[in-house]
Length: 505
Ligand code: NAD
Image 1 (cartoon, rainbow, N blue to C red):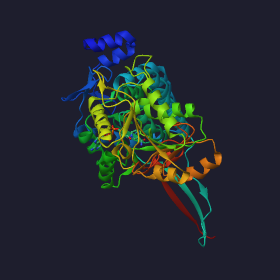
Image 2 (image 1 turned 120 degrees about the vertical axis):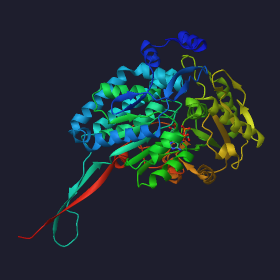
Image 3 (image 1 turned 90 degrees about the horizontal axis):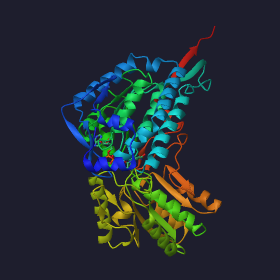
Image 4 (image 1 turned 180 degrees about the vertical axis):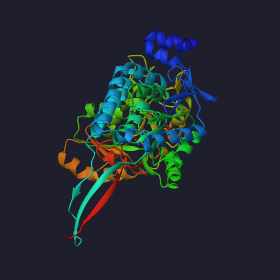
């Protein structure tokens, strides 16, 4: 197959594996009960670094969701998956992890083309994180169990025990910033305990989920366990969230859409996990190594072009070092190499789409209009890919929209504080509560502040360190429930208590 000329020139210049070309040349349908089908309606997939059309996707329908839910229901109620011996499930999930590893480069290339992210990040973060998460949860398949004991204080004698039962059919809706990795954040725990799933990937970035569904089949996981329906959030996503045939919905995305998803789910008493937006604060005290901290703060906001839910997007610096910090982070932002995802020299890729870039540009323009001082980057764009410069604002007020609203782009605000109390107050002054970061060499200060920050994760000395063993989720408008860690097992199981009365002889 050949791509449009500009896209062909791009992939020829930096190279693309034959496996990725072969996948892209196929017609992409939806996967229900192990069978692929294409719909009448299709949507183009646009490559972020060139703005050219890469391929096209099937726009699924509400009827497709009905069929997918029915298939997942059958696979759960009557299929082998939840009834396999735990070690058999563990082995199959391990085989799937091996297959993903075999196709590591192909999946990284797809993720780079689809999202625009630097290939090295797609390789080392997205795909490696996917493999690690799957292996971590595969191991849980044989370790999830209930407990038994005689804790009852009632008169008489009882044997009591609890069972951890898979919650059932789970609807999975994910965003576009880490498509495959976020999918695995949802699927790892769910599949390990025996649930079946209907996946709705983000319409901008569905390719890796489709390739993943092929690998699920190749691994020998039974048909109907993983179903993937591509399409519009407002159509298939909304229908899935409100579907009476699912037992749980797990959603990662914006707070606004999460509210709609949660409301639809509640109507059916559908269980839910909502991982939503953020506006995460970063506190920099005056005892830090300034150069090292600037580098880490920059990584925390410009990594993945700022399209990270827990990006440290508002920095508060002790007033004694605020000027020096601002000058250094602005200079650092100016030095970042912005370029196409496949170029090994690229440090920051384009944004995912023209619409996302327009939204980020509007936020930057609002900051300028509100009187914030632009010290790096700005609203100017470069194309035809969806490029924008790393942007830093100083002199910001807490009331400004750029400090209050999630931008989901490479835009940092810098303000100052005079003491610990003010730093904590500013950090917590947000509707969101996903993450917060402290940079300080004082252990006592860190231990004083960490419990007072309203955030699901507190990073100290670095940002966005993610491991499948550690739970992740939000306080306040950043959602509820947790992905990852042993805590996630509570969200994919129901606990049943069994009371057995022991009669006297
Ligand atoms: P989004 O809310 O626009 O879309 C997320 C998903 O929901 C997509 O698959 C979309 O198709 C679907 N969707 C859209 N409308 C829907 C509806 N009415 N009903 C059901 N589904 C619908 O978010 P996005 O722009 O794809 O992603 C960016 C957002 O995701 C940011 O707010 C970011 O902070 C958040 N996010 C959160 C986390 C976390 O772990 N907390 C992680 C990554 C991203």
